[in-house]
Length: 419
Image (cartoon, rainbow, N blue to C red):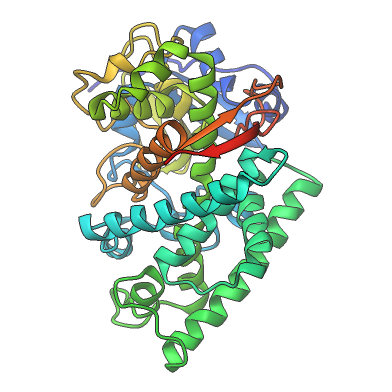
């Protein structure tokens, strides 16, 4: 029988305010102070175990030890995730729903996505050439909103793009907020869910006929394990789970501009059109810059790991940012260095910007391939299809706001297309 030790414990009645004050660094700071990749604390009145690092990720994605059902806080469900989406499922129900998502991630569909994206980049560059200045973050969200809708088979008028982009953006940007910003995100989700539910009903009644390979068609006719069509409200949540994450890639695209601006030598290498280096650069952007800070699950059944006891029902946070900056896995983790991926073997647990584990059987984000392909196209357009100036501005970003966005939202000027 293995012995158990006393898990490092953070003092205090509740540390929710500390989490809000420290953001991405909250778990990492305590792991460093405890000299441990695990500690216990209290958040929102509940006991929580926080873990970080490759070994922690391996145990976190063990479906025999952790479950996702009822783990996410209600405010995240009301804004970011939606109710009863794939993120909250376990076992065969999760596998069945995940297959629905993976069915639209074929090589052909990813190629169709990138072709749509290229078209919208070209349209945007032509538009920007006539503008005094471009608020790049806001404009890239619109590019991605148009792309996501067209790829997913979701019909949207150009006059509706601004509102839809704002609503999808609010879901993402309100994920770590309270007060008015939270209510803004909650209202945005309600609006989009009602709209998408109406589209699904039209598909099922035969008055709207998206292409069979699109998410709107596939999800509208998806059947659960009991053989019944997926509930309309849940189907809407899952369609939004295609649209919203694509729009969220705008955060990474803006960090591409920050990296190119801050590291001139990197820019020179990218302009040399070395495909391998572009891929290394994209992975380093995803590793280095903050995206989402952590993921959450509940202990499924009592177990012991590394001498520490995990009790059934205990909320557990896996530190995504800290794992991607863990010195046990990464040399000089706080240095931006794309070359570190030159011989990277692709661990599904040490590099987890969008979650870890297996795509088909586990909870690793089904949209990770989409993210990488969208970033490749965006790097190409930023480096090879347009010239632009980045005037003096605050390109820093917060390690507290979740998700983090460059403070100036990146202003660019004098945009000119390249032939």
